[in-house]
Image (cartoon, rainbow, N blue to C red; front, side, top):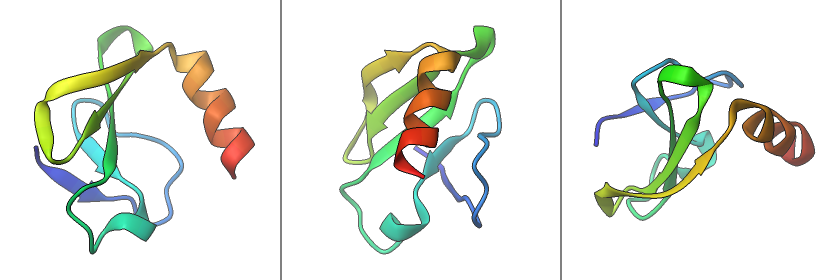
Length: 68
C-alpha cells in the first residue's frame, strides 16, 4: 500500500491510498482510496490487501464534513 501525505487536503486523488496527517508516524492506521465510480475504499495499513469498507462518494463526503 503506497500512502501519500494529504498535506491538509480534504479531497482524495483517485487510485492512491491516503492516510490522515495525524497518523503519518504510525503504521497501523486506516487509509482511504478513491476508485472508479466515485466510491471510497477504506482499509488498514497493516493489511493492505483487505478492503474493510466501501463507501459511496456521498457517504464519504458526509463523514469528512462530520469529522472536520
